Length: 146
Image (cartoon, rainbow, N blue to C red; front, side, top):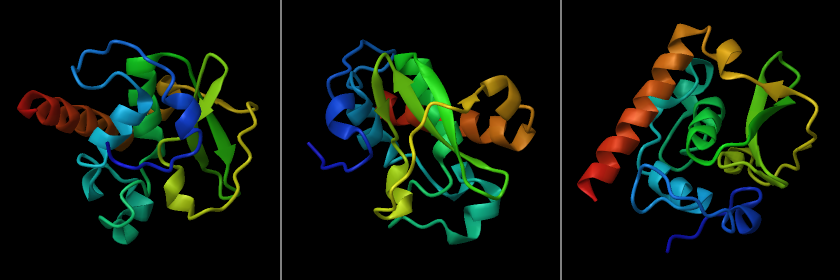
């Protein structure tokens, strides 16, 4: 199994749930699959010029968090980033985890549950909804081929 270092990885690997994709039963399984799906087109437009395969989680937080919610349930929260944007992460039961935390290169983030994020608000931005749909499509294609 591939190594992953996302925030809450060990706790998240204990969240086992049957999903619509065989081979994805834990958030860690999903992370390993998404590493093959994240791309510049699924990255937030303001970060796209900095996206590269060495930092695949860059700009992927909201679309990834809502995909996690689709597969594992729970809630999506955000960390205020000081520029009006939020970095999204997931909470399922009492487990807090962030599949895209590696983009912060070891920076300590405050995973307080103060700012719930909703897909209704995020997907008011057509580009964000399109990025989410593209990520879902890429995942479905990957899992179909495996």
